[in-house]
Figure 1 (cartoon, helix red, strand yellow):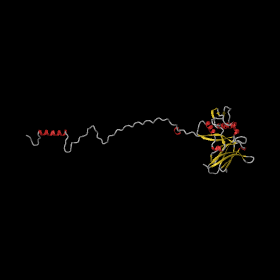
Figure 2: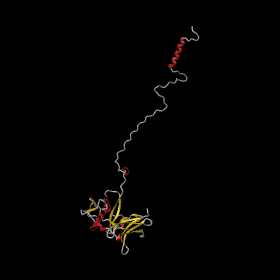
Figure 3: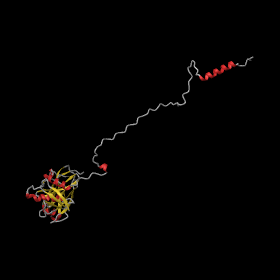
Figure 4: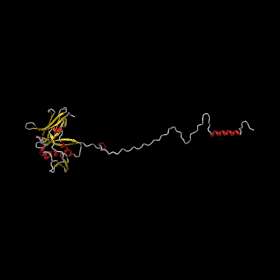
Length: 299
């Protein structure tokens, strides 16, 4: 006999079956299947997956090129300064100097002979300067301060000594040359041709040079009481400046001089620098050496 509050064995079995079935099979209904948990091996994330990038290919080396010449900046050295050489030309049968500035070279003797044979500039030619040196004169050897030269057998024989004097006075400006041997003859030096110099030699300014005040006039001279006078003329021949100085040696010997002259500012124009001796007899200008220049305003 069964009471009101007791549960029969059949009912108990049915309840147990329902409970076990609810745990093993997902329920369904109007809301659809119940959600299931993700597999434990997959971790939830809210960041997108990174796309793998391909490594950049190595840059090929540039094609082989021959190295260029080193520059002053790359080598840490500065360019050599230009070289200024003295050239001795002929004017009225006597030797007169001028100058050239050229790119630096170790072959200064060859450069000097090349420039000497090339002849004077237009300003130098206008001042009456010429060259008697033919092309093809070469220095074959420099040893023991003697330069040996090969000179072509050309030119007027009467001017041969002047040609030799041009070469000797030009080459002996260099410290490595004190004497010159021409065509196998005995070595000679400047003293052997000193008689071919004019009484007054002007080494500066040179013909055609642009000058301004104050102007420094230099050279050598053998004049009375060693007094050297200078004056500057403008394009119209008017005297714009005068001055005088004393050479390092008096009458009967040659000495160096240096005279400084100045003038009021002028417009740029052609002019002339005259260097001369004042005659002790009548005060006239004698032994005059005239150099055409360009007078410029003061820089």
